[in-house]
Image 1 (cartoon, rainbow over the protein chains, first blue to last red):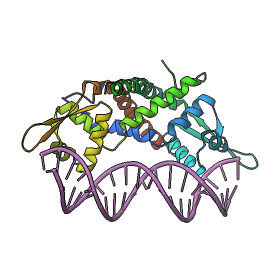
Image 2 (image 1 turned 90 degrees about the vertical axis):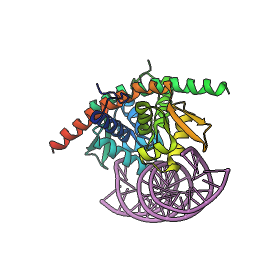
Image 3 (image 1 turned 90 degrees about the horizontal axis):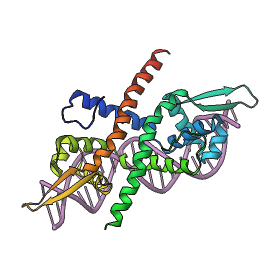
Image 4 (image 1 turned 180 degrees about the vertical axis):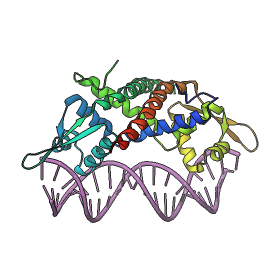
Length: 122
Length: 122
DNA sequence: CTGTATCCGAACCGATACTG
DNA sequence: CAGTATCGGTTCGGATACAG
């Protein structure tokens, strides 16, 4: 297991840094986490449903969904209806992000308390 | 332990989402992770040393360091030399980020393989 | 219904010069 | 030496109109 914080890392350290940047890059974007959350929790959604439920403009929604799809986190299925509809779903692979999300939830929660406590002492 | 991906979350889910956003916000910025890594691995550094080692313009460095300090991840110590020097160090608290960073390293590493494999099959 | 094109303002980052 | 002021380029996100 690579430790980004160890003093003895050389090439491992660079790889670790790159991996962190990769992760941040994938998750980067104002709506990605929220969209993933919706799709994982509520299951398949159509484009228009996402526009309404997440209150995102279609342009941004399209962009974020494409990026999520490129990263194998959501699938896009065109349904042969009339007019055409499109269904977006979270992939099973997207659940692998859980480990990261859990860590962020735990740290973020404690951090908020930490900052609040520090603010109280000033 | 809050699970962002569970279907039964209501208020917990919002809290979890907010915690994730908090974490992303703290780590957000082109250089924060790199700076933290330098300070944790190599110990205390002066402002000018960071400018050279990380190759950041002073304006951005100053901004990122202030944000890290606000989040209790680095300390700023003014030394009574002539001219004045300033030492930046990672706080013990910053090591609490390890859990998150480790998760991102692991996921980012596997994800790169995953995407490469998917690209090979097309 | 699903997107894209266009336009806009805001945020971000970098280079450089400058102040204390 | 440490940090800020100023300017400029690039990216980002939102609103709206429109095409397929």
